[in-house]
Image 1 (tube, one colour):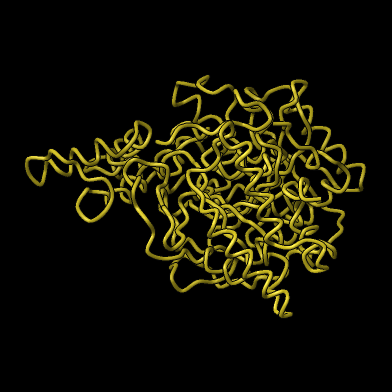
Image 2 (cartoon, helix red, strand yellow):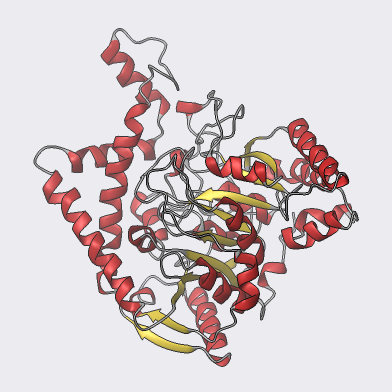
Length: 487
């Protein structure tokens, strides 16, 4: 059985652990073995601590032996994107700026995973400071898509999606600022959930754009995503944007909510630029819901055309502000040949940051500068309000929205050298972040060339239980997520 453990779901494995058919040490050993066998080609991990993971697994087995298991995640290896703090573990954000930094504390999500008994397994590669759509911007090299090693896994959480798809973890965490969980989930054929802004604490997350960032899970199934979300969600006094919302048992809610639902199809998401195979797969998903008794209604989100511009003003402005703390003085990369304090600041940042991060800092500083703040940043915030209102207006008629997750399947590594071409990869996901909504990507087919395709479902604020139930309704009628890449 051990050779198959790395591809099993949390739900299945927790049952095996509970019934003593497998131990956490056996499971963790299988995941470690799989990682050693394939990660030289996938390159999902920046680092991992094999002995530390096995020690956590042994502690989990001891708890179970004493009748003190902590729930379905106890003993399950979970990987974390390298922007989420784990005490005494590297926290690099895949940047030279933090190449040697070790976190002195745990993120809130890390604490909650530890409290649930999860085995924290490795630091997962990403675009530098989570800025990118392909995981090619990492200072430690790109991650490959397990379905085709010549292609990207998506980004910025590409290491998290690739590790899960390749069987190098049972679940993973990523962060989503403009699609960085959902887009790589779609490109790697796994489930990726971006929760409502404020549902999951951002304390201990390396900040990119604070009003957009949100931590969420990658999982093999919608049920697994519900299990992880129930663990990491909830109010946190350490995060001033954390919302005091009740956290239900999302897994239990899946079994109670059966529809039928009213589902909206935004006409703006099915125009030019959408790959024909992706469109066909999503249309088949829409037809499936309709055949199951759901009401399908076309809706309009009229300000969608402004999403990309609005996002890249707000996100870069906040990035410029957040990344000012990396100055070569207190921590992070420090230039060795600076002549004075100003030169130290200039050279440390020039040497530490990669090209894409510099590009966004420069743009963000520009839109915040004197004479341009009102023209760009303030105006973008006003348009953001209109974008959110578009969604809320649609929800007067429907329960959730169905769209493609990504306009195209995974592209070749190095294929998109133009930054704008990469930015357009997130055209269907960034509106969700601007509006602060929950959304999930579920596998909905494959291209003729064997590349995964993702279906995005966008829910109402703090209605993750309903959103996950709708996603589960599709998943139950298909087996796309049960396929695995051959490596």
